[in-house]
Length: 205
DNA sequence: CTAACGATTCGCT
DNA sequence: GCGAATCGTTAGT
Image (cartoon, rainbow, N blue to C red; front, side, top):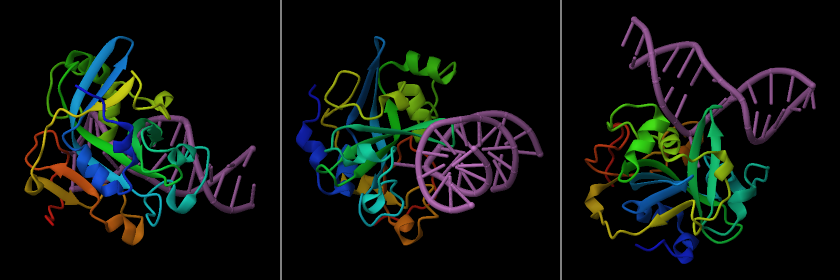
């Protein structure tokens, strides 16, 4: 299978990019341990007019610098002091859009994921939730800013397609304090997928 | 330098 | 369902 081309990541519509990432397959290959999973839940964060985004309206800090790269690099940051959250930077240089990968449906390397998660057998919590997913896949802050065209983290198109009615959109999780921006329905997930997190907020569009 | 705050998770009730 | 854990990042003194 082929890695997503660099043009995929230059999408100027971060919501469209978040939807198109559903069904794509995320790979990590660290220390000879290859893992993969189908992306089944994402959230879009826009560089402009989105208070929930770390790089809102051109905000610069050591942490947000990577947002201003052209799409196709990783953004990994630590939340609550413990959890590493993996995002894909999208859009052209200096636009600062990102897609948070929230849930995977595991495919390869499940033994490795179980080990990293300190679990004995697979259940639907293995790669459910951004912090759990990053831990299972071995992604940590040291992978912040790496290219998704490389051989450590990349995404492939396996021609998995979900019909529009099977893609649910809701408000993003944990963005309640971002005012009106936090209410935007920019979380996307695959309906009836066993690995998808929480069942609140249905809100078909 | 210091304090406040999370794009969360897990265990206990 | 609720609350604690936990520390890097950020903004303010």
